[in-house]
Length: 73
Image (tube, helix red, strand yellow):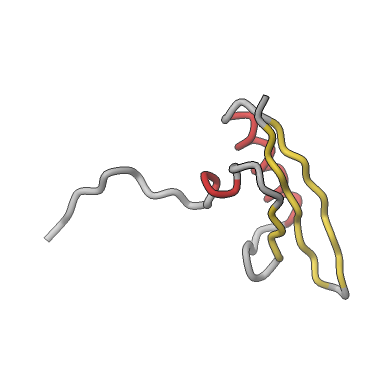
């Protein structure tokens, strides 16, 4: 039987990632899209929420990850 939901499910955990903490997302574990695409999405999400995003790509022993932090004025 079909059921109703309280809200439409999100495809990315942006509500959690926009809490102001510094997050490190590892390619292959936390995301599978190109790192530059995830970085662009993070900046777009920050803008939609009235803030900005600091981002940095790290490459440690051949493992790529993205560090991000959201700021709201």
